[in-house]
Image (tube, rainbow, N blue to C red; front, side, top):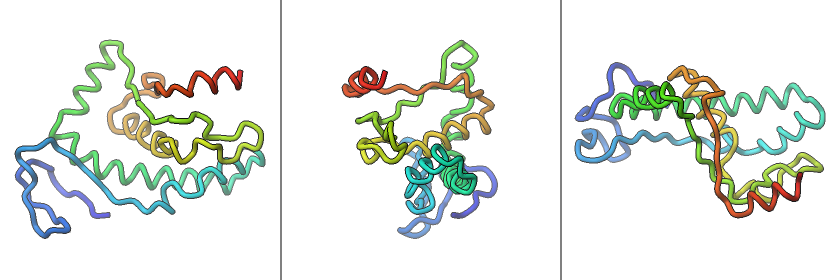
Length: 168
C-alpha cells in the first residue's frame, strides 16, 4: 500500500494499473484499495470463537490486528474521497442536528455466530464481515470525531425478525 503525500485533488496524476492517469474530473470521487483476505477477514469466526469460549488473548490480538489492517486500508481509500466530497463536514453537520450515523450492513442471514458453539454460523458468507464494520466505525470515530453512541447499524433482511424471535 502506498502513502498519500500532500493534498489529493481532482486532476492530479496517479499511478494506476493502466499507467499514469489523471484523476477523473467528470465522475464521482472514489477511493479503492486491494486487501489480502488472509490479513483481513479469513479466520475471524474461529478467532472470535476462541475469544468468546476461552478468553484467548492471542486470538483477540489476531482479531484486532485484522481490524487494524482493514482500518489502515480504509483510511487510505477514504483519504482520497473525503476532501473531494466534504464528507467530514456533511456527516458532522448531520450529527450536530441530532441524527445518528447509520451503517447499513448486509445481514442477509443474521445468524453469523452459532448461538451454541460461538463458531461460524450459517449466515457468515452472506453478510458484511463484522471486522469491516468495526474498522469503518473506528475510522469515523478517529478521523471525524464521531462518538460510537452517535452511530447505529440497521438491516432490513426479511430473516432478521425470524431469527430475533427464535433467539429471544
